[in-house]
Length: 310
Image 1: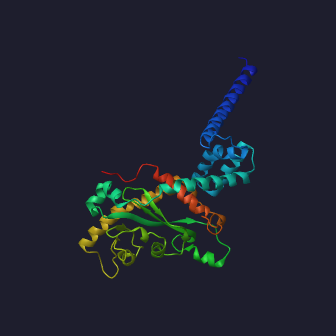
Image 2: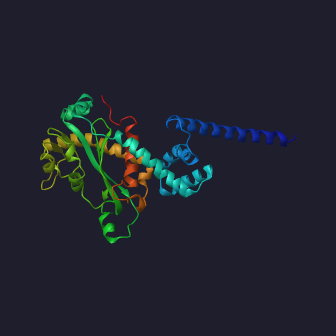
């Protein structure tokens, strides 16, 4: 049985040509989209690099570690025949645009909106009073060279240098609040008191939180109420009423942990050990890590809710 080298070469050439035509078509479509959104003025080559690379750069948020992000940058640099440093600059530039465009997706809803769409399990447990469910999560960072910063970011819970962020979700499951980044050593109570969350509460609101949030007094000063699972400290066991109330709170508060899990598992760059230059910025600017968190949280809000309405 003979082997037709010419036929094999022609097939290979046709496949490569088809693949090249497909890439050219996709880039042409992205260029037209860019022209349609920019007052129909033709962009320069450097401006075209942003919309073409945008979809590849967004995928780097889903890399499971910084090594994967570096590999993605090298791949993009090879595809578009540019330097890896240019890819990093494009990533920061695109992230900046996405941050300013998408941060409005994370917003604190009006009380009337909460009442109209309150899920049934919250209605049965607390009526229409619940406004937000809060928790904190931590992200690993590189070890700071400054001893003071190293001590301030050391987390005794994670046994690593971390930054800590307070997140708040509505009873409907959307992220409604993200604090700025704090050192891993800072307590949950201190973050709650100083992150601006209390300024958003109005009299009659209710917060669901974990035991680490000893905030009943500061929340009460705002005319609101904090529901926290009961402690067994100083007693052998909880009373039947305390046990039932704790079960009710824990059953509903688990939803904020599910949202945090979705945020970290979908955009697994948040599971990586972030470099220190992501945490620093010029005065009056927003650090890169906070832009990343905002964009990832906004994208989570565009997904289906983890909390059913029925």
